[in-house]
Amino acid sequence: MPILSVVIATHNRSAYAVHAAKSVLSINSPLIELVMHDTSTDGKLQNEIVPLLADTRLHYQHCATRLSMTENHNQALAMASGDYVCLVGDDDTVAAEILDAVQWAIDHKVDAISPKVVANYAWPDFLSKTFGRGHSSRLYINDFSSRISRADCAKGLQDSLHMACQGADGLPKIYHGIVKRAVMEQVKEKTGAYFHGVSPDVSGALGIAATTPSFAEIDYPLTIPGAAGNSNTGRSAMNAHRGNLEDDPHIKPYKNLVWPPLIPRFFSVETVWGQAAYETLSKLNAAQLDRFNFIHLYAICLVSHPDYYKEIFKAAMAYKQQYGKSAAITVTRVLLGAARIAVAKIIRLAKRATRPSAAGGRFFIPDIPNIHAASDALKAFLGKKSASFKGTNKNV
Image 1 (cartoon, rainbow, N blue to C red):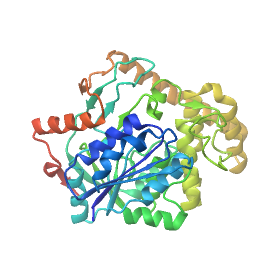
Image 2 (cartoon, helix red, strand yellow; image 1 turned 45 degrees about the vertical axis):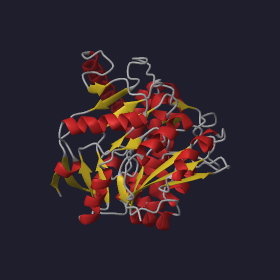
Image 3 (cartoon, rainbow, N blue to C red; image 1 turned 60 degrees about the vertical axis):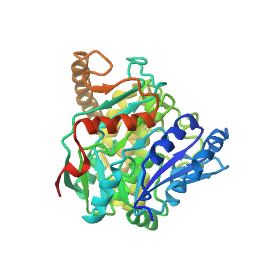
């Protein structure tokens, strides 16, 4: 039986997914399995995956029904059989040493490991509005400390709610994290599914945080997030990751979509995370929503997407009514919050302007053609530094 299932849900992205599959399967161990659930309509991945099926560690399933991203991920995770699971995108991969981390988690009865993003890869087709192709074909590697420490889930959840659940930082993660599969089964038993809302990564993180008391944080590269040109990351880099709910291709597959009145009704990174958090917390522990910082959500949306101000203030008025707040006080709090966020953004951009290149001073390895090659490059880099997971400082 495998100790780790790497889980990938994919749709019409064979150009990336086949390299992700090859990368994971290049880890020469029976202790790892790769699960791929594919809802593609173009038939490409079905054909390209055939040579890889000789490896019995690959469990591939094609689904002819068009599913939402969340449904696709729920079905993918249901296929896993490993003691632990790690969810990655179809343009991502994991490092070979991830098995050492899983074995350490088993030995020390750790339910979840949340690695910091140390290495990330930009595919050749990745574009940004500011730097064009400046990032493409690069593997970026940040400095890291090789330190592991224990973190409290209750505190992480409290901090996340204060920041309107904008991402999974400070939380135990299943997306680019390692989680005991039994924990995810507890989430499913309690709520009816592993993931809820329109963002599986945020939903998964909140579900784990509400189910287990602590997790291990590690500053060492165990996975490599990839950024492809037509990914959500790629859309964000081109400032195209927003729009009307009715028109967005990410949202259209969701049947009977529930969009709470307190979440601004438009598609963006911020609102997607907020909606997923709202739906997940509603099923896990609705009382937690009283601690959700809606004002911060409205403020950050106003700074990032001022053209949707009508939708933002409509949600703010719904918040005012539900929580018995004054309209004047609510609007004032939103505007003051937006001012603070805008000032911080200006300062951040000013600092970034002092490093005008695409890399901004970060170390990178150029001319990497795909995520499989990126994994090999990271392995070689760590070898030259004599760095390894087994050599990390485990203060747990």
